[in-house]
Length: 177
Image (cartoon, rainbow, N blue to C red; front, side, top):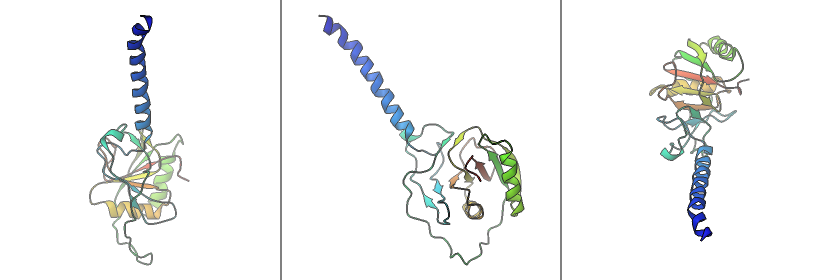
């Protein structure tokens, strides 16, 4: 009789443990911010970006969580290395997403030195795993040019709702050297 009385509470505890394990597994997956299109990974020391798979609804943890894609698609064709890009440099918002005080201003000075106008410098409180440039539709060529000039940029992604600034926004993390 006592075993029958223990079965319902044990079953409930087992169900709660199962849900917690499932949530941990889903949250440990890499996923770009909700409502952001596919991200483009910029491999180090290479000018060929790859397009990451679109996020699934179940893998989106939060709108501010961003991490590198896990399975890049085939590379996107790029112009030959000898061709000079004819991209107009647009204003860039630089946001510091690290604990390094003044990093945003340091990076803004580096961009300005190479001819990139700076719209704003500030901080970003969300989580971005690697230095990423976010772009508006039609600004992918400028984002690629910025990533080509600054190999510290490891990822390109479409802008998402709630990201401060407008146009190109560079979120700088501790990996900037």
